[in-house]
Each structure stands twice: as C-alpha cells, then as structure tokens.
Image (tube, rainbow, N blue to C red):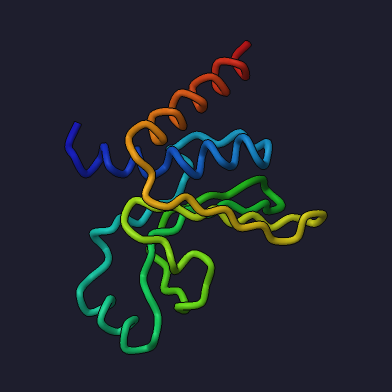
Length: 131
C-alpha cells in the first residue's frame, strides 16, 4: 500500500473512533472526508501567520440529520482558539454538548507508552463492542 494511501487511512482512524465511542455513531474510516497535510502550502501558512492565525490539522465530527459526519482537514485558527496551541505530537479534544457545554482536554507531547496505551484501550473497546 502506498505511503500516501496508508497515511490517509491512519488519519481517518481518530475521528472514526471518537465519533463511534462518544457519539454512538457507526462510522468506518472510509466515510471520513479527508484533506491531507500535503494540501497545506507555504503560501497558506504565510497568509495565516500574516493574519495572526495558525493552520492545524483538525479532526471533527458532528451530528447531522442523516447521521454523524466526520472529517480531517487543515483549518485556519485564531491564535486564541483552544486547538491552536497544540504543538508537535500534542493533541486537543474539544467536545460540545447540550448538557456539558464545551469541554477541552489537552495531551501535551505524548510519549510512546501513552500512545501505545491509547491504541490498546481502543482495541479493548472494539473487542467489547464486537462481543
């Protein structure tokens, strides 16, 4: 499998897993709309910086009338946006719900053990769902 195809599949796993667990969706990675980091040009980064913004890869999922839709794409964000501060391998999860309002959880510079634990926890979740 070419590296670009593999990277697109991997990028779709996070929003798929989060939407399935947190939103009780029934998504598959192939249903996630994707725009790769390769679509981010130096010109786009310069324009964002000149406008006091940053470009970040953002996974998103939202409930629509036809079900849950998910995507991974580059988004221009204001510097004070909660997702704008993620650096390197750090990640930020922002959840908005009717009862909880908006909750933001950040993971700064996870190491290999943290990442591996997350993968194992996800596998247990899948196994539990499959019965």
